[in-house]
Amino acid sequence: MKKFVCGFLIGAFLFGSMNAFAEPLYQIGVRFNVKDIVVDGNSLPLANRPINYNGITYAPVRAIAESLGYEAKWDAEAQSVEINKAKINSLVTVDMIKLAFKDQGLPLNKYKLSYYTLNKIEPISYQIAEMEHVHIYVYKSYEDRVRGRLEFEVIKAKTDMNVPFVYEVNNVLIFYVPFKKELRLEKKLQTVTDHLITSEK
Image 1 (cartoon, rainbow, N blue to C red):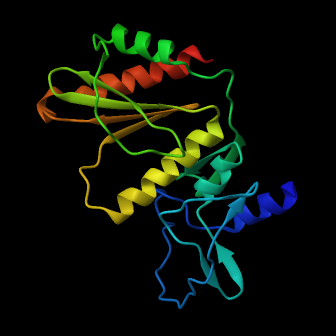
Image 2: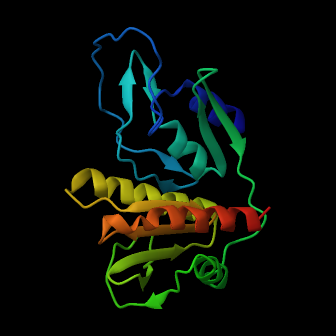
């Protein structure tokens, strides 16, 4: 099973937000006849549809790798895809998140505001700095969080939305919806995310 998965992932060239190889572009005819990708019995939500070309299926590497508990990165210098087992020491808790926000001078004030249900989880919504909002999803595993993000990517591809800043830490998804762009709170939230990552090492 694992040999099959590795071969399949390495053979795939669609890689989410990766930059394309610096090769000449050719126009090819492909078939969009791959209806679904099922990982461990669960359908994988994909914003980019898999394709079939000359009998070979091409699918998003990052989505499939992460859904199996791996991290996938694009090495632009080496022009290669790196796939490694995700290193998750422990799960991030709500208390850890609150403390990380407080350390950045961003106390979380609970706010009743609806946002997307992603992978069967509804977020806990908070107000920070006047009308700024964050929506925090806490999942039971890294893989569950990946599926939540993939569902959001599908929604984003289908709608004309005000795209929020998205932060990912182990089992947690954080969405920041800016109200006043001049506040530049996305930098502080990146520091929050970095702190949570560091605390897990």
